[in-house]
Image (cartoon, rainbow, N blue to C red):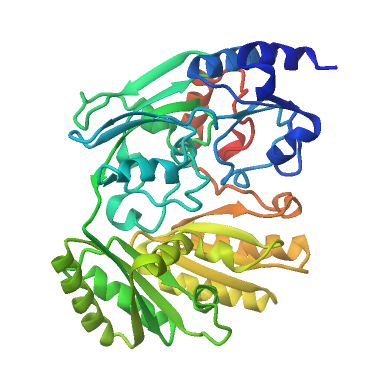
Length: 443
């Protein structure tokens, strides 16, 4: 017999859009099954669901494509999963203004396909674009290799509609690139992992598709030589769209060859065909002075396949049983910290795969931990965090088995900002129903 809560939700969204029991299996979070999963078909229905949850004190976990649900502290009580998959329309596309308004549940891949028919694109390439939703990448501020040139979701957001925890629908920003200056509430929500409000619609800035798009894979004997290549590119007149550094483990996954070694620098270049051709030629000339072994120029499907892998190179190396961190450090520190991170893992008898958005100082570090105990994995992640913190950076556990998360904090120390973050949370979600306990500082 349906529970009273299930019946009330069915009255809002329709019975077929409320799941319970075994049907909730795809929405398990850190081994914990939600009480119900509900899928509204309009922002007004999202508002009604949240108002009802707030009245009953029921925790709510917003769910886009589910690609980042492994990030965050385990929930004490998942309560309701609020799926946004039915909110998947391209509401408005203004090619002349280079803007689009899209519902939060639309996947990035579907959005890019729709925009591509008018020769435009959203200049984001997050991992798993076929599943990742616009709302999800905004809530987690996810990005991919092309953030080197085009920035992150935060940089492309113009306006946003969200539903607060009490069911109030609010709109911030506008629909054109130039807006009146003032408090930027929408951008406060970016990267808040659904703890401040549920994003239901966003207006984003677009770009024309480039005439030509190439990817250069440059191979080196050592990570240090590849790092020299990064510095040479950064100091040059070249304007790459992506600048990715990969260690030997990642290179093996990229190649599919058991014998690959050394390291690689992967450089994206796009624009007018003449500009791309010049940049590729200049790039190889520069890299020869850094110990370049060989290089390949990828185009067409081979390039597209490599781009898809680039978004999650390190996590793709190891099967289940692994763990991973992201590090935010100075770009100049990336090669050295990657080398030292690999040494730490090897000293503890584990394998590591490390890649980086080298130009912006974001490192993705995966640990091959099959057969290793949770304590050893947690200690290795802890040593990685100490290494990064000592360099002035920060480290976040991106994913790990529950037994590991019980031994190490997912989030780095937030510092003085934690007090302000808690005050904002208390203002927007005083009953603490949105993703409670999963964010920084237990927010």
